[in-house]
Image (tube, rainbow over all chains, first blue to last red; front, side, top):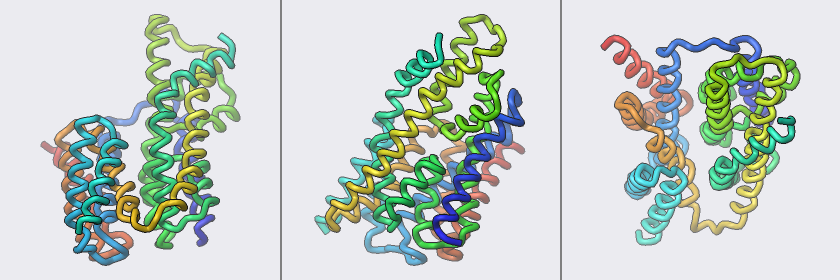
Length: 104
Length: 239
């Protein structure tokens, strides 16, 4: 399957998830337990993606870069939490990792 | 209030969303360009999928030409959150015909859900719970489109701008650019994190994703994520 057809299919699925509830489930609520499970799955996937994107290159663990990236991630998390801004945390973290790369 | 007046009201309410979308969409465009996606693919993803978290989530697997099923499952799971959002908005569009309803549902996102939903609830309370009828549905749709469609345009335009910016970045900045995606995600998480359960899910997933991915680069991290989420959720249900 080409990359283009994957994107088209993915968009179609996203559209269905947005449109179908409006047509078929109007006025209904999801059970609280299911809603919570969905939220947990989303958060869990995001964290897994953070770890994989930051520390792996293909199937290889990037051991040399891992300490500085982990430190930058910690700084980004603290800054984002304190400023309540994900973008601010990301920008500060990016500067930290850049500075550590140039120093090493 | 006319359709266009209500649309403009929605636009004014969307200004903070535009401001937040500019750096995020540019970050997405930069990250996608650095991962080897073309400008067409970046714009198509932004316009047709229009889901920041899902776009970021599938970027790696898509760029590395991983299995199509893996990309689609990851995107589907990330986009499941649209179901309750869209469901919560639906009662406010009473009386709207199916075609405009279907067309407008494309711009449902976390931001374009929250702002109109809060506004509609506020207006409903002001009318002391009087049920929406007929034309009110179109007024609400206009407000929703004022928020959703303009935010959508900002997101797509920002993605294209990010692609252009990334082309001008020297290679020495690669390490910082590689950090944009996980750094943004981590920031989003900690800003939204409010319960111990979510903290446990995040910590557990961070710790298990790497062993999972090293055991099976295609599915390991996804299975680990599903297992951790279900484990924490199950424990909470039975406790």
